[in-house]
Length: 182
Image (cartoon, rainbow, N blue to C red; front, top):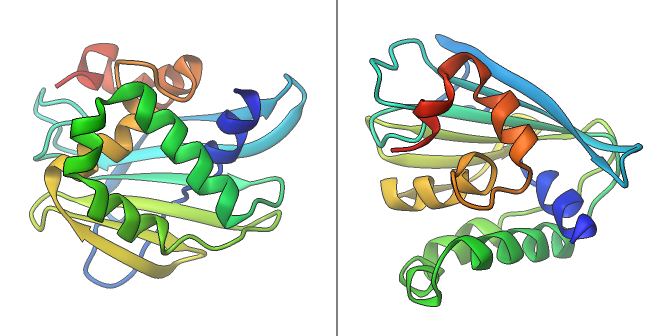
């Protein structure tokens, strides 16, 4: 369980290029770190969102957001996929996962190994309904689906069994806890 938390937590960072959502014009909502066994730092996380949340909440389909994960350890592609699949399967029914399987596989197919200091960026651009994954500011993949974005960001921010509840609460600090839920 802890390995899964560590592995998956490392999966994303933020700051993407091209026409996806970026940190420009976004507000830092919160940040935290994930540690394995309480003392091995795996990554730092930071959540950014539109400056106009308008009470909608961070997880609303009309809210652009970016999650940045900066790694303190090396991880493999297999680590990311195992972590993501584990968290998604505890948050969602097999039917819901099957409904989004092609999108999940598309994103997972873009993962690359990371080394200490690398960062993944997961951004959701609300007007385009596009989720973009970037590694060290290089866009790797884009997925067009607001439902997929809700599902995948839920790994960290969801109200039900996120990767780490304390991390979720720290990331959502400036948004207010009620905004985590749709």
